[in-house]
Length: 443
Image (tube, rainbow, N blue to C red; front, side, top):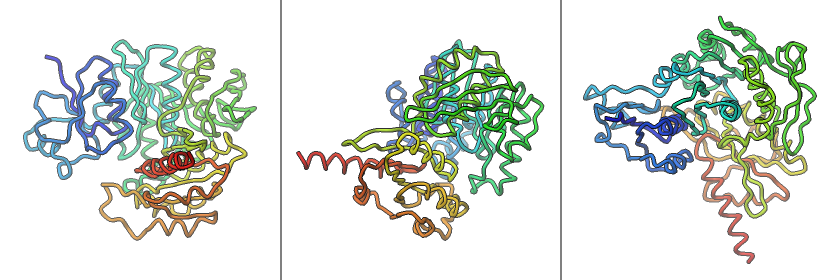
């Protein structure tokens, strides 16, 4: 009898990607989740993967059960039922740790940029050779005959400690997830422990002073803009069609590359991919060719035009990510006003990084703030309100509600950048409806 894989919380970004990958490899897959629409479910629906409401009846002893990390016995009937009846299940990262041992695996870790870099690496490598991959935007591809496996390596709660990839990129280290990590040193220690599990090659952003402290049994290759790195990106040309740059390796020129994405961070992400694939033996001409066609990943600088107005949707929810996203918007739209609409994600992160959020948002020309999106993990919301953040922003700033986004119309020749990891898209959809209604009213 064919084994059935059942996913508890299948709409999660990593979970949906894994479900799609197993489905494409020929396995029977189903899952359960809440009724609320989430952007990852479209791919599941298109693949014909059944999505059920949470129910204890979904759990069968002969299923291979994979449980999302957010779900516990006290907040999920399926986990509670499994525990009560002694039915075993694996967490996402536990399953992935054992699954990847059948492949030559490439991990992508880092406080920021994991999803975009995993997307670039997956795109290039799967166009060169048969490759399975998991991207944190809910995208997954599975092939039963694939030799290579690319995946996003998440540091939260040290989940990446179940992973032992041959190669890994680490994009940066930054203090985040203050509901779990106690300090920047705590974050560093987690990444340092992870680095010791890499077996063949570690590719590290060399201009991150924390990353320079990392040690590993595997050879370490540094990449960056400065000459002391092994892989150096230089002669940058950033335009409204993307970024062109050259890469050298320890003084040897590897040629010119172009990626049709924006922001200095994406040049670094591409350089990391170039370095990894060069060291692991792939043809750089093929790498060069396929970098040119990378279309981006979901919810990372995703653009649409509504009634002539450019709207950008981005997952940025940390100050470093906000700066990178706004930098990318200025590169592509140098003559337009950059309007940021930001929803703080979790009270713990907002409290810990309040000043940094204000500094980052001041890179925009105008700022609109949504109410803080709390996490189910947060018992205490602390003494912080979105108005506290607004007070620290020196640019034009206003708090808006999802029911009234009309203040956003007070701009001419603007690009609207919606950022957040909660339900910021509901604000975006409200604005899109407003723009569409303006068109119909004029007609």
